[in-house]
Every structure is written in C-alpha cells, then in structure tokens.
Image 1 (cartoon, helix red, strand yellow):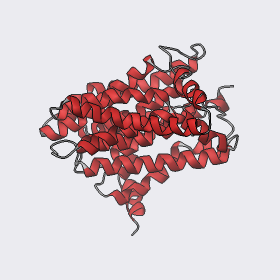
Image 2 (tube, one colour):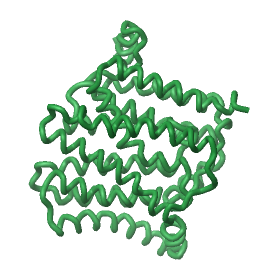
Image 3 (cartoon, helix red, strand yellow):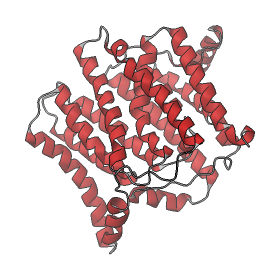
Image 4 (spheres, helix red, strand yellow):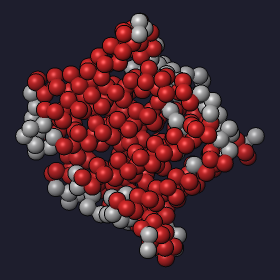
Length: 346
C-alpha cells in the first residue's frame, strides 16, 4: 500500500486524529504534507483573489522574482505551495540527519506548515517565505559543526546562506547573531571562526553588489537592499482588530514553546539539548529582527515560522497525544476561520 494511503488509513482508525499522519520516522510519510497543505490553504486555492496582498520591504533578490510573477495570482499560489512543501521536506531531513527526533520526525515540519499558514498574508509567496529556505540550510550547516573537527567550510556556508536570505528580506541578517550564539553553545570557538561566518555573508553581498556594479546600478543596490529596508521599530500602518487577532495566534504558539522547554529537553542527552537550543536562539533572534527592519507588518511574523514550527513539533511529541491533538485542532480551526473571515466578516 502507498505510504500516504497507509498514513491516512491509520489516522482514520485513530478517530480522525490528524497528527497521526505525521507520527512516523519514515521520510516517505512526508507525502502527507500535500494533503495537509490542501487543507490549510484550501480557501486561497479556491479563491486566490480573496486575500489579495502585495509584498513590501523586499530585498533585491525578491524584487527580481516578483518582477517576473507580476499579478499572476495562480503562479503565486503554485510557487508558494511548492516552496512550503520543499521547506517541510528540508526540515524533516534536518531532523532525521541530526537525529534530533528518533521517531515522529514529521511533526516539526507539520507544525512549520501550520505556522506558515497561520494568517492570510502567509498564503502568498513572500520575501520571508523565500528567505526561509536558506535559513533552514543555514541551521543545518550550523548543527553540523557539533563535535566536528574540520568545520571551517560549514561556518562559511552558514554565513553565506544567511547573507543570501537577507538579500530576499533584509532583517534576516540578524541571524548572523544566531550563528554566533549557536556556535558558542555547541563548542568553543575563536575569532577566526567568527570571521569565517562573516566572510560567508560578505561574499553573498559582494556577489550581488558586483552584479549591480557591472550593470551600472550599484547605487540602486545600496538604496533598495540596505538604506530603504533599514528601520528601528518602523511599523507599517496602524493597529487594527486584524493585527491583534494575528498577533494573538502567534502569541499562543510562542507561549506553548516557551513554557514547553522543560518537556523538550527532559531526559535528552546533551547533544539533543544543544541542537534544540539552537532553534530557541533562532526564535529569539527572529524577534530581534524587529529592531532593524523598516515597514514591518504582520507578514513579518513569517520570520518566526521555521524555529517556531520546529519547536512546536518537538513539544507536541513530548506531551500526551490527546493533548497535542486538542491543541493542534484548536489552532487549525482558529486559522481556517480567520482565513474565511472575508466571507463571513463583512
């Protein structure tokens, strides 16, 4: 029987518990993500113009991509759906590769998908969604350095992926701080290793800057990548009931992972504790990005989705299945109701 069909049958036999689809240690079960994405993005798939949205505060790499997408909402949906699926697979690979979870390895990716569909602004391709791909790769390279002797090239890769992510959305450059904090938590390091991380980020900017210099648009690069995107607590628009609802959804998820820290590391070996700790550092650094980004709106919250989704998945594994299912169902209902708000709220 097909792996996806096995998971669906198993879920049906367990009284419709959706999370049962993701309680496996087989990457082949990741096909369940397709079904899950259709459920969480169903409103936008059926009515793509209902949540019309335009990205702001784009880096130069995002500008290049959105220039080709234009107003093609169907292409936007296809690309965002595909990218979320790929990112979920990447997170599952990281979890299994570094043995962060020995079983139920799909749960972090499932909750990442849930967090990535939490508000209507997330249902479209965005600079943050594009950048998250490279943050996942950076986290993978950072975790690789644990107990490894020859790791200089991995540190360069960490910096390069973070630099590349910030070319899509500027404030991802704060993840350089994550690289320093994460590295300090898993091993002792020297100034040389700090310079390796910084050199990776600088190479990403050097290559982008060199391209714009060659086409005689270097001032455009500086303006649209750096000056225009830098701002301290620079919020876009005014607070509304929509803003409070969306902040409330993320606050609930943040409370769960912050108060669930003890469950996540209980009876875990030091290696797993340190790897989970890196994702907590990523969460705090993500919140710190507010201090350097201009034109911040609720779409900025997508910068939290990788560490928040991962930590929710680990937390859900450590608590009782029934409690995890109730929490998950509550979030799914709230998110789907909020996505449908344009239909019943007017």
